[in-house]
Amino acid sequence: NYRNYTIGNFASQLGMWVQRIAIAWLTWTLTESPFWLGVMAMADFMPNLIFAPLAGALADRLDRLKAIRLYMLISACLSGAIAALTITDLITIHILLVLVLANGITMSFNYPVRLSIIHALVGRETLTTAISINAIVFNIARIGGPVLSGQMISHLGIGPAVAFTVFADLVFVVMLYLVTMAPKTDESTEASAKNLSAEIIEGFRYVASHKGIGPLLFILAFYSIFGRTFIELFPAFSDTVFNKAEEGLAMLTSVLGVGSLVGSLFLARIQGVNGLTRILIFNVLLSSIAVIAFASTDVYVAALFCTFIVGIAIVMIGVIEQTLLQASVDSAMRGRVLSFYTLIARGCPSLGALLMGWLATYFGLQWPVASGAIACLGLWFWAWRQQVNLARHLEVRPDEK
Image (cartoon, rainbow, N blue to C red; front, side, top):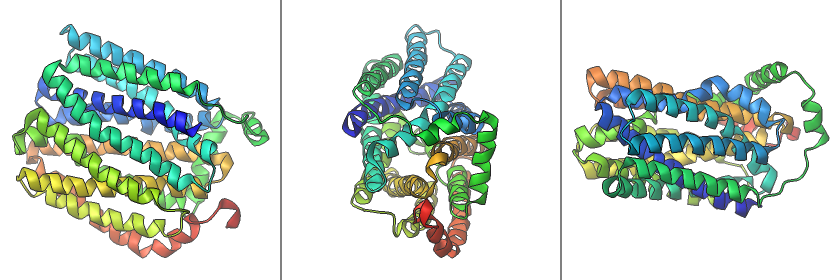
């Protein structure tokens, strides 16, 4: 079941990266504005801030396979609309914004379900390995997707690149029909009888009162806003700082994926959760230093090396955050807590991209990015001092506390 899911997931992730690069480059060619890059990233990710709590409560209620299939079909239709309008030269920046926003809303409901299904397919003992494999798939797609997108844009145009995503999403839908899952437990059935708004409030209270999960999500939120949002500005860096156009954009994104793949392969060898908190906090420091170096240079090769290091750190932070959450959360709260993870991991970068894009309009690209990374050094120092206490509450089963 996990193999079938992973095959379909890889196709979907590959299509997502092809489309992400295509839309970023389409946005830049339509506007040549760093601010619009931030706005488009916000439209893609921001819906998570609004809908993730509702999506998490629904994830604890719905048939997960049927829900993912529905969301992916809607996403495929929206991608098809973008492709058709681009091919016929009818696309405008405002139409693109509306369609990207609609897709962002759809995916804000999709991601909590996709995250929570992994635990149901593999169980707790191999959870770190399964999530790492999931990250490996994601990062192979992050390497191959931009390269494929760059070639398709250069030889076929932006529209056909986006059309590829429609095919990839449909492959995922087909593979999901080959996955079977155990029926929901009585606990899940009992939860579905509760009031939906009460479940959402219960999820917020659980996160706020948990001495490990609350601080863990704070670390992710701060880092997502100030530490990693230079990624959404890659098109502007590639064109104006490094003078490499779309080929440079594809290379930066692919090198980021190579670093993330290396980090994923390292994490896939780890069994259990002991020591993950320490690794997470170290990678906040590593990423901050690498981003400062990236923003301080106009040498393309040096920037690629820094991007590679950031790629390693980003996947370490993301996989470990998700693993610690899944390992320490009560089963009845899994969907809601993972929706908060999705809210932060996808929503906060949109806030950061909008902020950095706006600041870049007035101060250039490099100073805002470097300042955000310096702020993350302060985050690392705070987390380093909390390390022992965080590990005590995160690296245990819920019933062992």
